[in-house]
Length: 113
Image 1 (cartoon, rainbow, N blue to C red):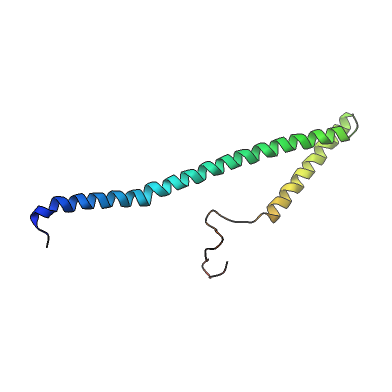
Image 2: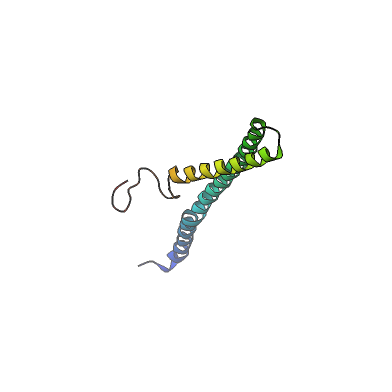
C-alpha cells in the first residue's frame, strides 16, 4: 500500500503517463493524417492541372489536324469528347481498386493477399 507521502508523486506520474499516452494515441496519428491529407490534395491538384493541360493540348492538336471549317471544329469537339470518355472508361476499368488501408505485405482477414 502506498504511503500518504507518495500520493503527490503518484499523481505526477499518472499525469505524465496520461499526457504521453494522449500524445501517442491522438496527436501523432492526427499529424500523420494531416501529412497524408496534404500530400493527397497536392497530388490531386497536380493531376487535375495535368488533365486540363493535356486536354487543351489534345483539342488544339485536333484543331490543327482537321481542315479550317466550323463543321470540322464541331467534329473536333465530338471526337475529343469521345476520346476523353474512352480514356476515362479504360482508366476506371484497369486502375486498381485499393483503399488507404490496403498495404502490400499486411495480411487480410482470410490470410490471403
